[in-house]
Length: 364
Image (cartoon, rainbow, N blue to C red; front, top):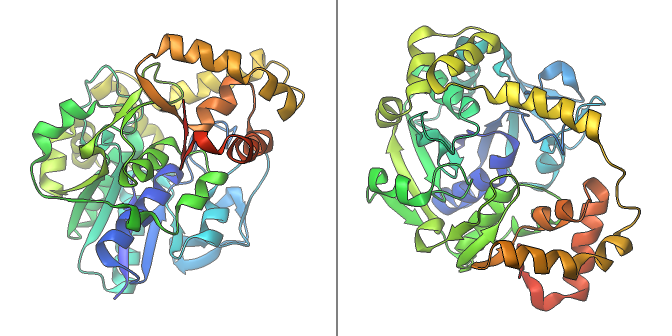
């Protein structure tokens, strides 16, 4: 039987969603629906992409397009989804939030009806989908809230699979765990087979931390943006099951979007301002302008970056003395490398410093 899963946070959650699917359902076929809504290092255009931002899409249902290995983002847009479609054993469908909650609900309903699924499983890595909306560390509640509101609007049986509490660096684990209960499974190293190679090129940090936790790594890991290490614990490898009603009760933004039926992305953004006091879309726009206006020359070569590695590591250890790891994305961007150069740096580090490779993290 085909399983239907929704990656709540977009491209970064697709790997984690596939990992969770394999742990739950083994080799059963799966359709994973995802936004193309990625970090500016991947897609320099703020906000989510729609069908018109891609070539080579294939119809999945009247309102949902399938992303395949032949799909490509139209420059200057970027997306990791086509390569994920080529390397993951799932059918990958594109969710477009530009029509707001009603359109997302119709998209999910169409796919659920096509495959006659009994339940839709929404997967979120980290737990911001279970945020109230007023947490000072919350950064990106809107994509997750739109998915939850859409599933409620669609009326299809839905449950949340919250993987790796706290690993996205938004809501700390100790704030989430008391509310999550004891209905969970724990991922193991065996569950990570088939996905760990993806981090050779994919920049997702939360999913990388989930894989590391499943493989038994424990301790603090420095990531980009948060300014504090994310700590891997025994709870970091858990996947909690939560009913849709509980998520709607706790997630005030999702509840408001569901009640109001916001029928445009602009309307959903306005609701985020009202409920949470901010909009990550506006933050993306502002950051995109800053990156454009203050861009500094990239380090001329990976070799040059490696010359500065030890000095950078000394500063990092001084700033985060309790950390045991860093993500490779953190290392690369800390040394001024992105894109293909960041991938080359990772290859060199794994080859030249194998004792530092705690797959898929860099050991400090």
